[in-house]
Length: 383
Image 1: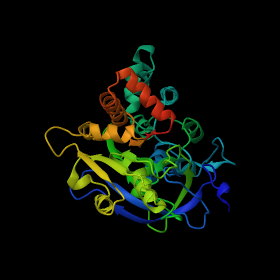
Image 2: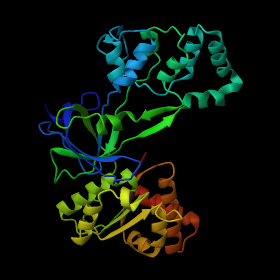
Image 3: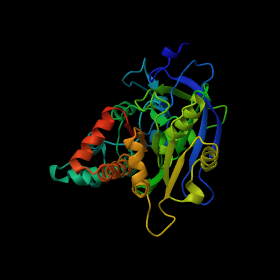
Image 4: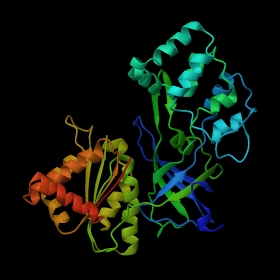
């Protein structure tokens, strides 16, 4: 099969062949380094690309939904884009998303509930003045919660699956260079767990990869998603990388790639997380890279190791003069990670640094940043 034959809709069946825990003893979080074997696929990737992974849902969630529907799981159901009917269990396991219930489902549920108090409650949530109440109600729940909370509802398998969205692949920044690992893809995966509505929730794909795999055995449907996130073609250019948490992944690939390609430009890495002792991902690799010149500078920020929280944007401000010197001399800046807070704060710090270093007005600094983006000297991979 050629490289062009593998895509989002026709993934390659790979296997995870290595895993190791990146978080240390005492951490209340779990982040893993995973190695995916793509040998024999002829799939090529570039540093900066992502690996798309098609997950399956947890069998315990599927079982509870099947039981709540009063079904046995073998009932045939039809879903969009399927070649033909599937069993209810197969559709719920591999094709449909079980989270994110909608207003439309509440409408269906309100008509299917036999118990008067439950029907009244649902109809109240559907009233025009209850939009915020309904939004919060749904935010706290998945489909399985609604079936459990309203057990008198009579909803057939086909009616139920008609309300579900298609299960989507997740994209993970590749944490390896193809020059070093042409038939393997490294990932940095935070295994997501949290609680809503009194239930423990599990990230669909992160738990599929991190906790439901048998190394070397379990099949994982994957594909490479090409990215705009690219190193400068000129290896003499300096590079500044800002990657807190799992945002460090593509920069592990960048550092490997630059070293393997013989790039002469300097590499400056910013990394941030909560605690140095438990959350310093790839610490030994960065120490070795510094010792051997693959990294020129490394600035780490551990937000909860002192009374006042310190983040990567604070480290940037501390190094404002050097940052401006690098940027003014053509360095490329990359940011990867949280879009909601970190990326905005880093962007604000960058504008301050440029305004101060270049003695510019805020408007001129904003224009300078815009020009950096246009020239691909400021790239972001945020989510």
